[in-house]
Amino acid sequence: QVQLVESGGGLVQAGGSLRLSCAASGRTFSSYAMGWFRQAPGKEREFVSGISWSGETTHYADSVKGRFTISRDNAKNTMYLQMNSLKPEDTAVYYCAGAQRVVLLTTIPTVKYWGQGTQVTVSS
Image (cartoon, rainbow, N blue to C red; front, top):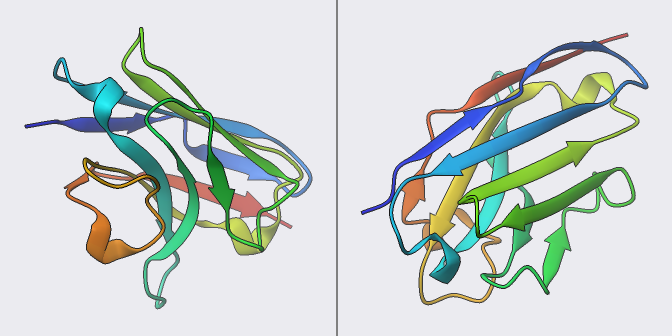
């Protein structure tokens, strides 16, 4: 069992930056593929970025490629999402996600564990 807790959300102006963190409980964090998803008001939850258990493989949605960077520190049981050049359309609740036995998390059905979410609001 893994519990995921996000932090780092907030209100930022367009063009600004935020760094989200996802702290995981449990001793098996390093064996989990991890990822970030987001859900804007009135829209379905969507994939943002994924990272393999080792951190060597990453994947991004086209909408955030070149602006967001995912990383993880297995010694600290923590995953990060550095978000730069934020746009109003990035406004959403951002969710941390994890699963074992997959190389990358890119779709909702592959997620086994979810965090509670953290709000990111980008003003124009």
